[in-house]
Structure formats: structure tokens, C-alpha cells
Image (cartoon, rainbow, N blue to C red):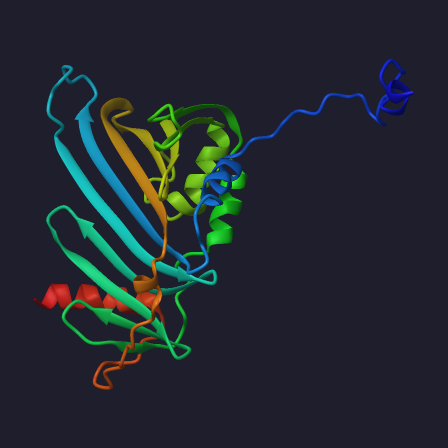
Length: 275
């Protein structure tokens, strides 16, 4: 009687479809799985670091030869996100041989304000579109993960989780155009190599690297390689009680009202040129 009630020994009819379902894993699914471990009630502190190095090497140079030239540029964003909105940000742009530019952005009493290093806060007419947490995850959703190796630093489960993901090359290239290098000055260079690693403990990080290879020609013959190596590091950590409070930001009426963040960057460049 008991066996009959639980179906033991009885034929079980198949479901509506017996066709196998191919599981789909994406970079976005892994990212959200790790992010859901964090306490996001007060908000998040998001850090984004971008670095690009470009080297020029002769086509027939001997292995180990120093490049004929190199360039480096960086961009950093330190963001305070509450209720899905960026309420404060420090943006830093740097390049080899140039003075670093720093801009602060803050939201207070419904107004957006900017500050260039050494100045107070001026008003912005348009709220900067700096970072959208949901859009970030949606872009990662478009990158299928072919395989993933998951490791933990300590066997008792108390260590950092590290996920080394093998991702689809075409989708990764699209990801770079979308937000990792959407305005890249090297859109014609093919993707040479790439990798993506996620990790989580008290914070969540996403690192991805890629390299591009271009070939210059002289009189139709190869002359030199342009090797571009890039790295993006994104980190997410819960805001603490101390960091969650919004500090008052008083506007300096002596500063010009700027249309948008692009105008703030231009003002920063002009100040650098005049220094």
C-alpha cells in the first residue's frame, strides 16, 4: 500500500518532451551568482580600473628585443551606488607622459555637481550616466561560458572562490565593443587572446584581459607589429554604515555651470594645459 502511494515499482509516464535541454551558462549568470552573496541593503562600492598598453615591434625583430615605442593609458572609477543609482564618483584618467586628470561627481538634493582637483563643486545640467548595475549584468549575459574551473583557496569553504571562465570569442569581442572598449581607437585590430576570471569573498571581482595585434605595412610589405594589451578590473563591495551616509555638497557659485560630464573633462584638460 505504501509502495503504491509513492509510485515505487510503478511505471512513470515521460514528460511532455524527452528532448535534452542544453544548459546555458553565461558570464552574467556567474557574476550574479557571486554578487548575490553580498549584503546590498545599504548599497555597493564599485571600482573599475581600465589599463591599455600599446607596444610597437619591428616585424623581423629578434625575440626579446625592446619595442621601438610604447604607450600606456589608464582610467579608474570609484563609485558609490545606492538604490541602483550612482550618488558619488571619483574618476581618474591617466596617460604616459601626461598629468593625471581627476574629476569628482556627486548627487545632492536632486542636483548633479562636479569638482575638478583643487576646485569646489560646480553644477552640471545633465546627470552623468556613469554606471548601471543591471545593464552591466545584461551585457555579461551575452557572453556564453564554454567551460569554467572553480577553485577555493581553503578546503573548509572559508576562502575566496575563484572562477576561471572560458568564454566565447565572438561574444567577448562584442563585449569589448559594448562597454570594455566601445570607443576604442583600435577597432580594426583583431582579437589575439582573451581571458576572464571572477572571484568572491567579502567582495566580488571580475578581471578580463585581452590583446590585439595589428600589422603596419610599408610598400605592401609587413613592417612592424602594434600589440595592444588591455585589462579591466571591476570590484563590488557592500557599503558600510559609515560609507552609506551622504555628505553635504555645497555648490561654488563662482564655478561655471557645465552641460555634461564631457564638458567637465574638457575643463580639466584646459586646466592641465594652462598649468
